[in-house]
Length: 61
Image 1 (tube, rainbow, N blue to C red):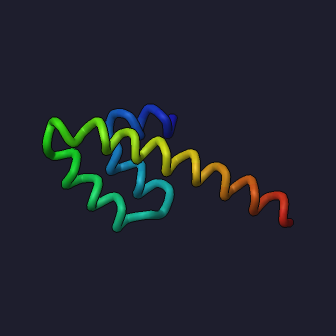
Image 2: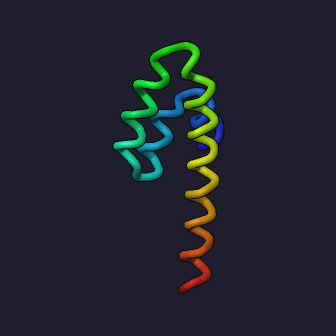
């Protein structure tokens, strides 16, 4: 579900993973049509990093 959100509304996905400042930057990037593609790529990358961080935290417990 978050992957679809990362592709359609990249700025909103940053808020779901707890990175509001990055979400605001991504929102301004997404306002332009040309910036939508880099915003979506950045959002998918940040989502993969978030999932990796969650797995590492789970292993440390």
